[in-house]
Image 1 (cartoon, rainbow, N blue to C red):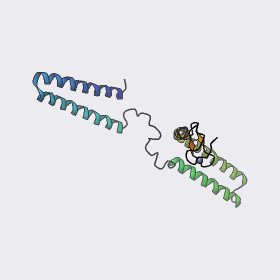
Image 2: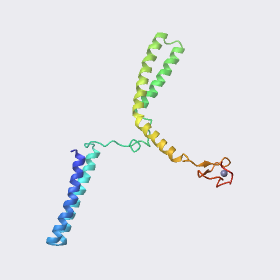
Image 3: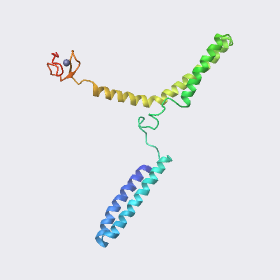
Image 4: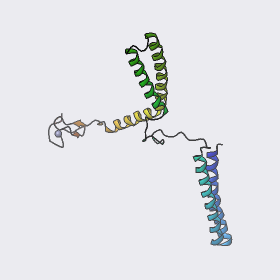
Amino acid sequence: MNERKALAFVGKLAATLGLLGSMVLATLFGAGPALLWLSGIVLFTAILLLWTSLRELSSDLEPSQPDPIDAPGFDGPLFEGPLFDRKRQLLKQLKDLEQEHELGRTSDIDYAELARGKRQELSSVLSEIDDWIGPYRERAEELVRQANTRVAPADGRVCPLCSTKNDADARFCKACGKETS
Ligand SMILES: [Zn+2]
């Protein structure tokens, strides 16, 4: 049993104990002790919840897989970070190498060797970026697919004159009255 499930179980146990206990106490001793018991349980649950959220903040609990779209930073600077810095750097270095070579400051062999190294690194940086973006892209594509199915006319007739979407069996456009078939 993982910690998350254990905590959920303890929470349910607390709720059950709170209700049962307060009912028993209310029957035996009246409302006062029952309320005291209930508030004790509520306090315990509150502390448990606080503790859980603190534990999750310090990420001691195994983190649940976040939805990429909900992931922090999604609406932030998505294309920034060390990988993107390195990519820009490499592209600039390649350009500089090319210029140096065109100006005759580097030999063909040196240039070929240096450029090859940079291109190799660039390609590994690009594939790392690709891995990192992958889930976002898949999610984005899924959202686009969903939007498209929602938007696509089911089997309506689009008016040839005003482009209004009419019912599938409409003979005349509901907007301009033109025959749709
Ligand atoms: Zn029309």
